[in-house]
Length: 150
Image (cartoon, rainbow, N blue to C red; front, side, top):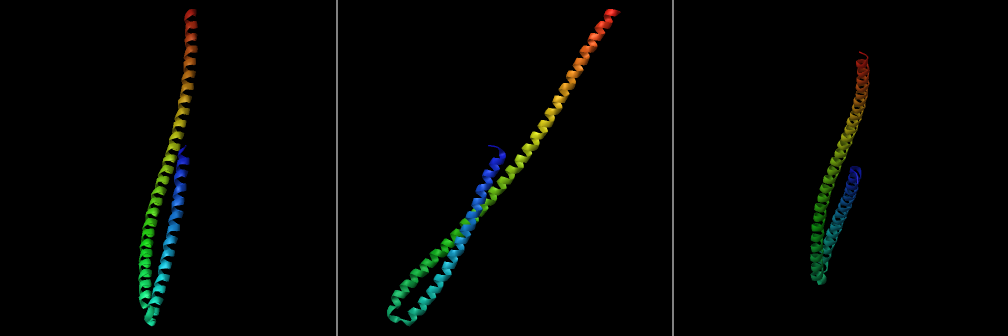
């Protein structure tokens, strides 16, 4: 696995986490809408209980149950918002990590290019040394030949 694949493997879950966070925020909004509807229902039940004395105890019990449900939905909505915030924070951290991996990948590529350039220069130097060695050998041969002629 190369560094680009690793970065992609981190970016993809980050996108999924962002989508999940968005869905959780939508769920939180829907629970808030439900809470409003329950409040409206509770108000209507209060009105009904004032006009119908013979069923007022049952309506009061029903109203209490609806208010309890409303409180539970409100608590759920708060918890969902808290979860959504944590997921958003996690998504940001994952995106930051992905950016760091991309930066590291770029640095590694730059280093690789520098190593390749250095390798080419070493190869060129080696060729020059070989040429110099050949010239020295030729010169040595010429000196030997010259020395024989003296």
